[in-house]
Length: 368
Image 1: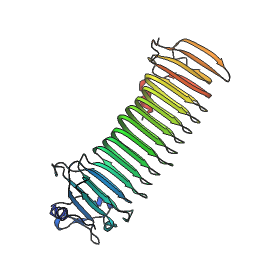
Image 2: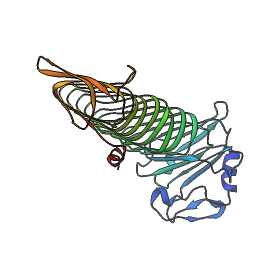
Image 3: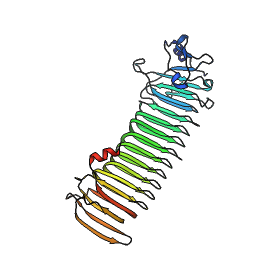
Image 4: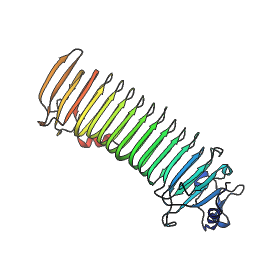
């Protein structure tokens, strides 16, 4: 299916076991043939085994499904192989090559059957540069690399338990799914109606954006995060650090915030629970705001809107109310807050600001 070095080809044929179980990729039953390659009754899938530097890069350009995982450290303790397996569907159009000078493995095709699959096992610390076309999906799991770049058109991107100094994911119309914990400086951009769903992000700098699709994350542990959506909702679980959220048309929901939080929406609503406080600044230009706080929280308050409702269960000292044109402003202190470093501002010029207490246990229920 492609021209590779004699040494690499010989290595592939010396394998005493199949490189991959291709039935998991293509859904077809395969049986091993001599030399350890997998063969189906009508067609033979393609496999390559390349000797490489343990620190290099994988560059893939494919129109079909691609799965990338680390090399088995028990089978290859030196971490100096890249194994490539392609399902039989259109495998003859796949080109695989290794450039020793660039330390780059290229897996390329623009003619593979989109229903086909390619699986790559590479050294744990290989950088990844992947582009899929059409509906081609990408899955990367358990890698630890300096740079990881994934671009798709309509295909889904699945990242699982990944560590990268610099992670960039971009899709024109596919889903982005982050499973387990993703570590690093993270940039995710999803266009059109693409959605982004995240289990846990942890790193110094995080930027995630959608256009019309939902942006949902269970956990954020970051120094600085910026999450935005043009028309989609932003729904977050437990967030820690300096977080900035913005949506033009969608709603913003945060189940639990510990740190500094800035959230603004033009036409949507804001619903936030503040468990530990830095500075909280909430703005809903045309919608309403609900702020829930732990009863023991110490904070300065400034709540303004067309209407402001402070629940009687919340004990606010030095509360003052001032009427303004088309609205009201309420200021005060919670639990004798002594420092100006901790405050909550909520502004809903055309809506209602509701302020009430909520227990930590109740906040956990929201995340189920």
